[in-house]
Length: 415
Image (tube, rainbow, N blue to C red; front, side):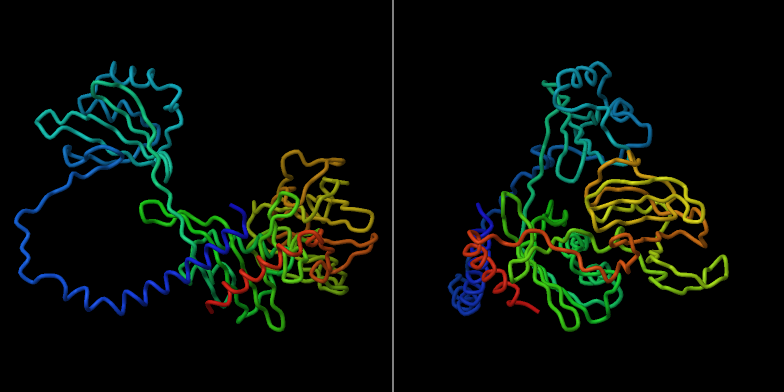
């Protein structure tokens, strides 16, 4: 189903749910009165209880978690299952599950007979939130996968910035993964290090649930970021076989460069032509922006390009330089180490990890000194107006306008 149809379905579902809700509210009294007051249930029927496809009320359940360097055999032998049965079950199901992939700390449940033997008939190993493996020690000795139902709901979120986007999402009770989604969508158009109190956002998103618990976010159906004097709307659209986000004019939100080379940090020093050096104690230019971050924080290339150098450069410490095109180049200083495969002459893509935050060279603490050059001259990275990628093409403008109309309608339904 294409993006346009899904958006129309969402809008229709919202309207239908509101209609049904109002109808039910009006009719609730008459429906209640229609129930005979002298109805008496003659006999209560108890339905069997199932877990992982097993009638669990027929067994005693024993729960636990896999110990570090522990083995399933240690658990099963204590509950009447022989080593021969364990080996045979593993042999019969080698293609289903590799027992070496069992992770310490993960949960398991034993289904044991209710008689005095308390023999285990099943062991359910919870491999990840959505997938379990059922070990059977009955007439058949095997392992079968059990995949929990993943339910999705279309939800909305909105919040106002007090300190950061992360705190706004957390305080709103929304999935933490929404922070990453919004950061990626607006990475080229919103400076998340320069957010101010009162900036706010809206987003329509898909949230996954397993056993009633949130399991993260899926597709983003539309988003909006509002700052003092400006508003940016993200509209999803598939062009040239790839979904991307565009603003209301049809321009791509994706720029040639990321706004910052690392996530969720703070600026500790700005671009300046005359700054007191914290170690040398002399006034000298600081042609970069310092991002304070813990040692080991990944540093990303802000755009496609070729590495021109990756070496220890004295006061700059471990440094990587990237030439992006004939006009733009960037530098990443004071790294603790370089990324895998980083070397002069190597091509990198936007978002590739080229190093990790450190405190090498002349540095008072862990941070990244990020430099940006235009035609060989240093410029303030925070003031670079990066060129956008391709906008909506002429042949797609009609479809885009329809999707834009739906997204704006949906975003206008909540504050």
